[in-house]
Image 1 (tube, rainbow, N blue to C red):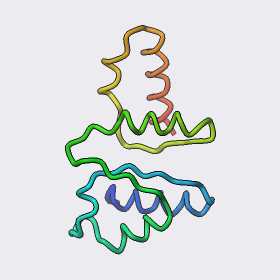
Image 2 (cartoon, one colour):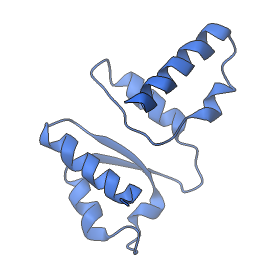
Image 3 (tube, rainbow, N blue to C red):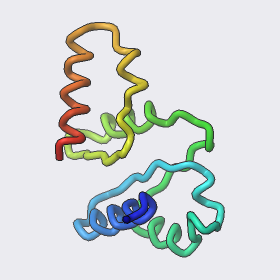
Image 4 (cartoon, one colour):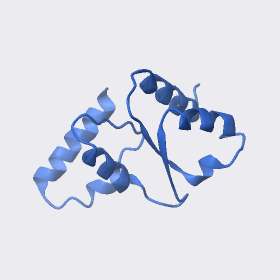
Length: 109
């Protein structure tokens, strides 16, 4: 079974081959050399992508969504998060419906 750390490494390498500009949002604990996050692997990924490290306890979903929208129509984002926390914040039924369509599209492909 492939770990999510390996999935991140593979995704960065794959997207970097297409000369895509990459932004990886992570947590500061990823910077600590450990059995989970090897310094050499992080350096290799940082040479291929821009990284933003949030506090370990932060809720960075809003930043991810903002950065994606602000980057324009060409931007794509990859996440393993279902973003369920945001559904409760949507006030009208049309927006909730659009969010559900987005969420379904993310996990169908």
